[in-house]
Length: 205
Image (cartoon, rainbow, N blue to C red; front, side):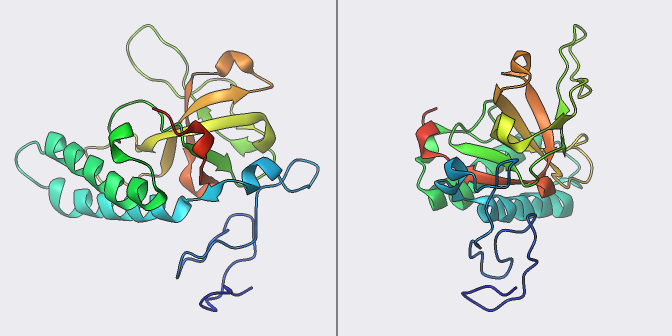
């Protein structure tokens, strides 16, 4: 399979639905468990390439420059990531940057994270605790694409003071038909196992 815009060879699989060369969105779209096209997802704009550009930018800045500074630069780096997210993601998809702050721990209601696989998708859901720590070991650790609505909070690494890869999307569960008691919990999903869509129906703060 080749990109219709630049003829770059692409992997004709559900994991890759945009051209890595020119970011042209390909025809591959999320489907329901029965194999039909998910009409709700089709109406949404795939903005995963913008998120990936942001990921590459900030992890390179941290790993190459900020991580090795002798003074704590975490606050400055947080301010920088806010600005970069606004420039590389929000402004590119037409969302007023003042609606959101990347480092504020609330979800971007307009950014829906959709698993690329239809069934049996791995997920790590936060389990409530009384000791102030966050545990990602809720017994529910597999989900179906059609039963859950996830909204992006930020990228996540378990140790963000060392080398970062931003391997995971940190998300908020806003709907979960088979496990409604997990709504409003945070969860982690591998960034290689999901796409991010712009849902303008959730464009409020």
